[in-house]
Amino acid sequence: MGEDGNRAVVVLTGPTASGKSKIALEVARECPVEVVSADSMQVYRHMDIGTAKATSQERRLVKHHLIDVCNPDQRFTVSQYQRLANEAIDEIHARGNVPLIVGGTGFYIDAVLQSFELPEESAGTRLRLSLEQRAEKEGYESLYRELLEVDPESAVRVHPNDKRRIIRALEVYYTTGKPMSSLMTKGKPRYDSAMFALNVDRDVLYERINKRVDQQVADGLISEVAWLLERYGERLATARQAIGYKEIIEYLEGRASIDEALETLKRNTRRYAKRQITWFRRYTDLEWLPATTESERQAVISRLKRVVEGIANGSVE
Image (tube, rainbow, N blue to C red; front, side, top):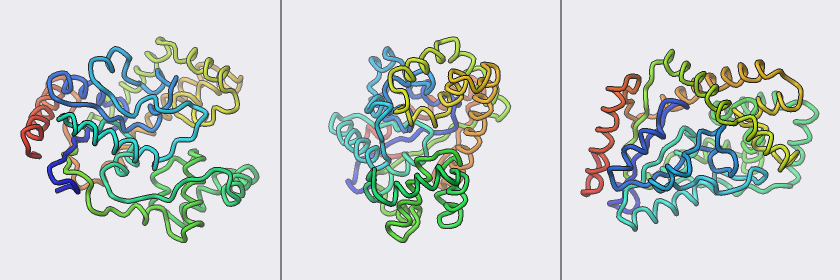
C-alpha cells in the first residue's frame, strides 16, 4: 500500500509516438480520470507542436496537469516536477478522481512514484560555474565520460548531449559525495500504482515517428521554433537541447538545410524512442501492452478502463 493507504494512480508510458496521449484521452472521456503529464518538455509554454502537446480543445475535454507551467527561458527541475505533480495528485484524489500519469520521461515517473528526495538545485554556484566553464573548454563529451565513471547509472538516464542534466548529476556527486542514482534509491512507494507501457512493433513505431515529424512541419513547427527564437533568443537554452527544436534551430540559423534538419530530427527521435524502451525495460512492475494494431489499441483502452473503474471502486487491479 502507498503512504496514504487507499490512494492509487495509473501510469501509462512507453516510447514517443506509441499513442499514449490519444489512448489516455479516450479513457478519460469515459472514466473519472485526470491526466498528469510526465513529459519533461511539455512543462514549457509555447513549445506545443514539437512536444506533441494535447491541444487546447483536448485539455478542455479532459483536465491535464503539469503542462505549460513555466516559460522556455526558465529552469525547471525534477524536484519542482515532483512537488507539483504530487500536489496535483492530491487535488485529483480530493475530487474523487483517478490520476492517470501519462508520458515518456522515466525520471519524472520515478520522482512521482518513489519517496526519494534530491538536493535542491541552485544556479550560479561556484561548482556549477566551474563545470560549465569546463564544458565550454573541454566539451560536454568530456563531462559525460566523467559522469559514466562516477555515476554510470545516472549517465544512462541522460542523453550525452543533455548538457544541463550532465552538469546537474556531476554537481550532486561532487556536492554530496554520492552518486545521484544512490540518492534516488527506491524507498517506500508513495502510492499504490498500476503501471502500463505501450509495446509497438519497432518498424511500425519508427514509421509513425517519421510521419509525425512530417505532420508537425505541416502543422507549423518551423514557425513555432522561429517565434521562440525571436522571443527568447539566447535565453532559449531548453529548446536548444530538445529534440524537435534543436534540429530546426540548426536550419533556421543556417547550419543545416531543411532536408538535413528533418532527417536528423527523425533519426534523433528514433534513437530517443530506443533509449526510452531500454529505460522502461528496467521496471519490474510494468506491464507491457501490445498496441501496434487498432484491435490491440482498443484492447489497451478496455484494459485501462477496467483498471480505473477498479480503483474508483476502491481496489488496484
